[in-house]
Length: 343
Image (cartoon, rainbow, N blue to C red; front, side, top):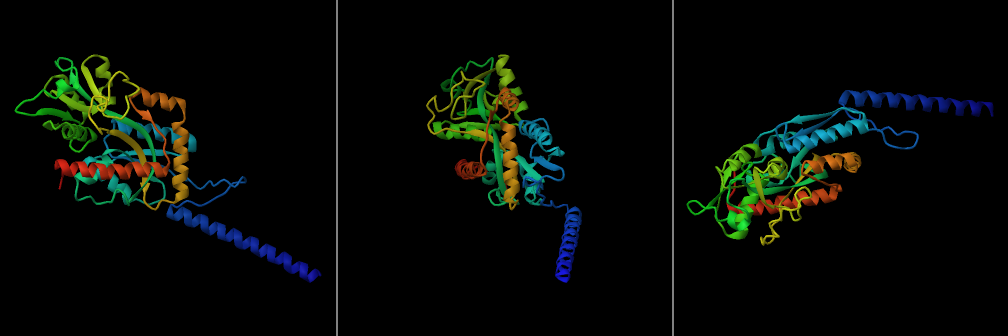
């Protein structure tokens, strides 16, 4: 009996030593490769993510709406996880440079992509993309909606949509947008298609210069983001004609939608959200979605976003995936019909 007990004790000691040795090997391997190590606390809660800084890549320059949203999310994620969240701007090619960078990054949840609806427009505009927007990413959450706004300058005689469509020179109405292939560009093309009117696109490098020329009556009408136009509408330097969203904007409830004004099947609401590289573990994607959901439920975040013209949103991974894929197909059809393509 003593011999058997001794053997059992020896086996327990050996198993403990083997387990400890395996643990040390796993820790060293994880540290060497930068990979996370699954650790469960006493309550069985997985504590393996995040274990190092997370980078959010923004496909636009600093200071814009998408960048602002990314920085707000980063700050809140840092508070929640006590982990550094780095916002890195990689603009260029309408966001394709930053998107490609994230598509080629490790699928571990530590490199994320902050984009807006331009991400879904680009596949129909750029025929030589180096990534597949449907296959190379997993959507995490849509965090905000924002419509575009059809505006005219304060000196313009225009006060409604019918008058706006009569501001013709050489048979067409010139309209300003925030750039080629932007949601505001497509807003104008959709209006032309739905009404049968000829609209001439005047692209600008951002909403700010477009607004400058609209207010100076250099361009008769324009589509811009409601956030970029809000302060000028409030000061009277711009007159709002209509919003592109299916419902009126909470910050400008007096401004009708284009559908209300008789433009059938007109809906262009710009989303903003986070994506991860394809093949990111489901557990990590779920954890990211849950963390973002907690942030978007905070009253101060909702108040701040509404004050900037955004409608705060929350979505499941599946819901956001459906939104993006549907928009990719919808915008591809539109850009094909209007002949919008960049080689």
